[in-house]
Structure formats: C-alpha cells, structure tokens
Amino acid sequence: MPTNDLPNLDDLAEAIAARLTRRLGVRGLPGQVGEAPSGEPDAELPPGWKRDQLEDGWQQLFSEASVGIESIEFTQSIQFNSAVTPGYGTPNSVPLVAYKTLVARAYPSVRRGRLGGDNLTGQKVTGEITLSVGNRIIHRGGPTRSDGVRVGRLSDIDRTLWDRQLNGLSGGGLDGPDLVPVFVNPTLNFLVPAYWCRPIHHRHCRSIY
Image 1 (cartoon, one colour):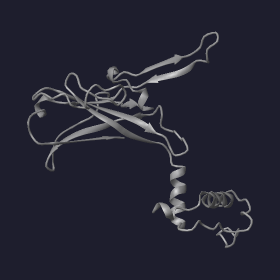
Image 2 (cartoon, helix red, strand yellow; image 1 turned 90 degrees about the vertical axis):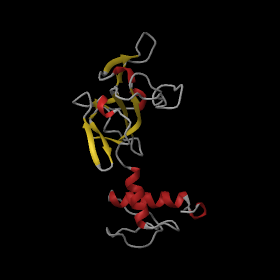
Image 3 (cartoon, helix red, strand yellow; image 1 turned 45 degrees about the horizontal axis):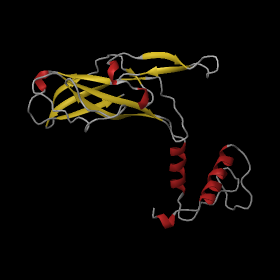
Image 4 (tube, one colour; image 1 turned 90 degrees about the horizontal axis):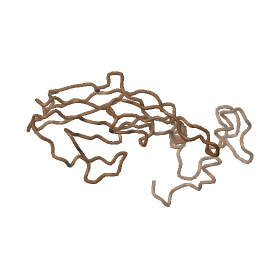
C-alpha cells in the first residue's frame, strides 16, 4: 500500500476496538452505522482498507511464538560466526578441508509473537540435515543429541557447550535483586561424514521441528 494511502491510525484503532466489543459481547461504539452479524452496529473501516486486511492484521497481532534458525555454522575445527558472540571475520570464511568430518551448527531461537507471546521457550527441538546432488539425496542425518536441544532466546546459546545445557541461578545478595533462573542452551549439531566432504557440487538443507 503506498504511504500516502495509509489510513488514519485513530480510525484504525476505533475499528479494532469496535471489533473487540462485538467479540466480547459489548455494545458497539456510538455514532457508527451498519449492522454486524451480531446485530450490533458494525465498525466502519478506515478509507482504503478492506475487511480481510483488518482480519489478517488481527491474526498477526495475536500470533503465537515460532522457532527460527538464526544462523548455520560449518566447521571442522575453528570457524568465524557472530550469531551470539562478536565476530572477527566473515561468517563461515575459514576454508574447509576435503575428506575431513564436518560439523554443522544450527542456532535455533524462539521468535516471540506480536504482543510478546511466548509458549515455546524451554521446549526442545530436533531436526535433520540433508545433502543432495541435483535431485538425489546422498546423505541425511539427525542431530548429535538425539532428543534435541532446548530453545529460548538467541543470547541464551553458548556454542562451546556442544550437546550440554546448563541451568543455574543469578542475582541474590543482601542488597541485590532476587535470584532468577538462568538457562544456557547448546547449538543443534549435525555431523557430516568425511566421505561426503569432498569437491563435488552439492546442496545442503536443514530443518528443525
């Protein structure tokens, strides 16, 4: 939608408020015309808006949290990656060596809903990595930790933990804040056998669930 066609925010807020009143069984806003399915006065949409646009925006506003992969690291010993720590080089710029086992580290994190909803932090995710040449899959493997890893904020990940996760408490003291739980999570790690780390043109694909 062009910028000059954006509706007045007050009008949009009134339309959303009116929809809330109908869903909660409260009488509609005064001074508005039209009949809603409930029989109450229907809210007039701001100029340039269609009803399905308002409905889509409503669903996005209250959408639940989701899990995303923030970064993928390919390493055989050391590698640059700045997902959770300061980087000293371009991510994945350390060259890989042929016929040496490869570790692919995935950095999964919880992305909160539009209103901060989070029903996923503390849950576990797992996944798989696949290598293919053309349309033929040549390797498929699961994570090194078979039951998956715990997810939370991206800043909660420590890439040095391998498959361990830590739980602890922080704070406290005579004049300090109350103790709060601290969770440190590992990356989701996959091993690629040395045989497949050779100079062939292949694609990698990773997924989490």
